[in-house]
Image (cartoon, rainbow, N blue to C red; front, side, top):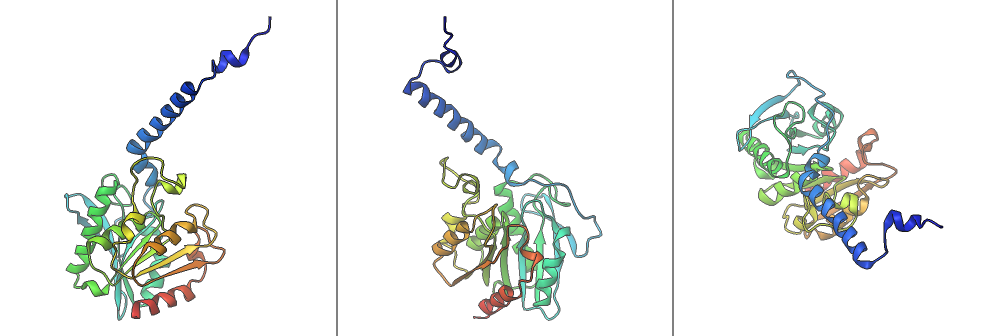
Length: 268
């Protein structure tokens, strides 16, 4: 007698069974998006620096949590860059970038997300926004006015940068390798009725001029994300694709042309 192995393994075929299976899969995705997404968005290997890092200052955020910030003043400064880095990065790994900024007379004021570097706590979208506001407040305390402030976000840091540009005035918003929304980096299209760091939903209400840098060969966050953001922004804007660059190697090459274009953009 022939054994119906397929029937034993998967049972009787029915559309009801298929829809039930799809509902279970969607439920798992939905619960994962609710409970695990922020841990997946903010992976980290551990601090690259200690308490003697040049320019380091620990600040209390709006809810009393201690966050690590770094302030590097440029000679004859013209602007200050409020910098929000990507995941897997911290304040101790960004000197090559910060040196480029200071050479162009842009001071730097940056922070580490909670749980990164010497910042305490765990990173969440809501507390990231709170900490971004604290960094802006610190810039004002240092004597900068909004016309001197450039808000700069790289990768996931673009989420903090876009939100801060919505809440506070600045001279310009710079996004480096940004995503449209966090979930669509992996899914390409929305699959749950909410998202994290919905930059695309916010960018149309941002008043600041927008300047975008993105690697043309970025396989982690496709350049189509920055194209959507560029197209949705209503004001002055420029988007520059870095030829042959991926997601993590933009600063391994000369960006003199692009940074000169940014300097010109800021002076208009």
